[in-house]
Image (cartoon, rainbow, N blue to C red):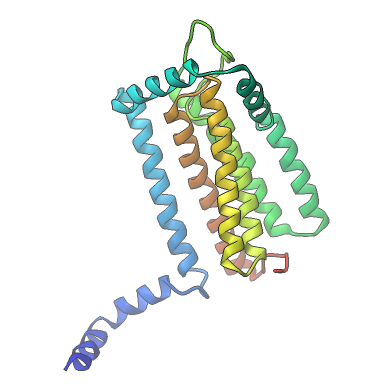
Amino acid sequence: MFDALIAVVTRRYSRQIGFVRARLSPDSYLGLQLTVGALVLTGFSWLFGGIAQDVVYGDPLTIVDQQVAAWFHGHAVPALTQALLVITHLHGVVAIAGYVALVAATLAWKRAWYWLLVLGLAVPGGMLVNVLMKLAFHRSRPSFDDPVLTLASYAFPSGHVAGATLFYGFLAALFATRRRGWSHKVAAGVCATALVMLVALSRLYLGVHYLSDVLAAFAEAVAWLTLCLVGTRTYWQFRLGGDLDMPRD
């Protein structure tokens, strides 16, 4: 009886079931990858929008911002300050641009044109989006009587965190496509996330960003990186019929 019911439902909703199967197929360019990408893009875009709304209207998150900023400033110690200054300077705009140029040269030498295209869209494009967001929100940075570091540019969202998320996220995606085992893919994601968190910590500790600045930058960068990865791969496979240029290990 149960089998008969399943057969009836399958016949009745065959088109809908076929649609769901197609969206979950790992072999179709409009399948699982695009579905997951759309969910990630939507989720992190919604997260960025929620944070931005709180910042604009002074919702409770901004109170947490002040508390977190005051806590880090009150617990600063010279040795840690020097270490995190190094971390933050290694992830400035100029530094990220240098890393991107080095990776781009390597990809061009290997003729990995797909990944070179993704890199060009993801990191420079994402950093441009970040600058536009700063100009749109023009949020001032935290202010202290005895600041550790003083910057005159806008705070929201964090450019350092956005750049680190875009760059390390790209490297994690590149590494993941070259490895077959899930343990390597997960490890790449964990390492990229840990590095981004370290950069975010440096910006909070040095008193140049609020918590919402770094969270929004992460959400913004993940959404943009997802759009670039999924959009480029879908176009590459559908229009050009190409592979990802670099063999798997």
